[in-house]
Length: 304
Image (cartoon, rainbow, N blue to C red; front, top):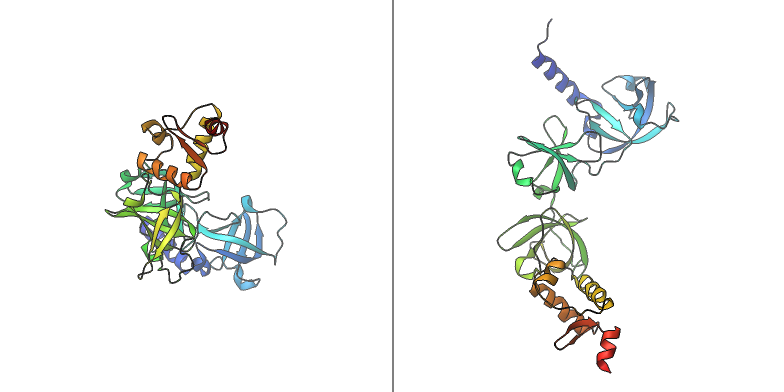
């Protein structure tokens, strides 16, 4: 019987879906060495003659072996598919696994979507017809899921993995966030490592935030719907350090377009941080000159 290319592909897909280890794709597993070959070693759930069947074992290529593996040994591996859609194992731990939310680097794109670096030889694909919307970004925040063939893919919609916060334990605590989208009222983000939904209101920002970037924020409210209201943690340290640097060269800090641009903040935002530093008595303001560190020689000379 002659098979057309389409029939062969369908047979390959059927075999892949029927593979015993197909359910492990996208996860770390401890598997047993059941056979050695010139291409690598085959791993299965356990050591038995039955597991020598190709539909019950997976190849760990030579490139990922240390050479000390023996029949019966258990090895922790990540199960994935190669560019030919064959199920393979690797000892490399990826940057993200199935059902993770991840911030991944954009490596390439075509008219069908983006190719993202997941830390393996094969990049993970994010289908999108709006690939041109990402030309100004180096990263994107995605969830790791599977297509109908159980191959790992990335999706922009992370909402299925976001959870409501049902505790007050994070209130007034600092958290790590990834920004994911902008709305008329604020910047939407995911709060790590909990996968909580957060928002930073535009009117609380001293400077614009970039999408798909990582920031540190403070939880100011846990809402009834489980979403978190956040504020970006102060940039007081950056302002203080700039004042100190200027003072060392005999210069005072003044608020103007140049200093705001240097700090990547608005002038209003800079003034907020200066007010905070003044209240903390870490800096002083000298009339007609500017700001200096409270314990600097410049401040001491003024007191004299």
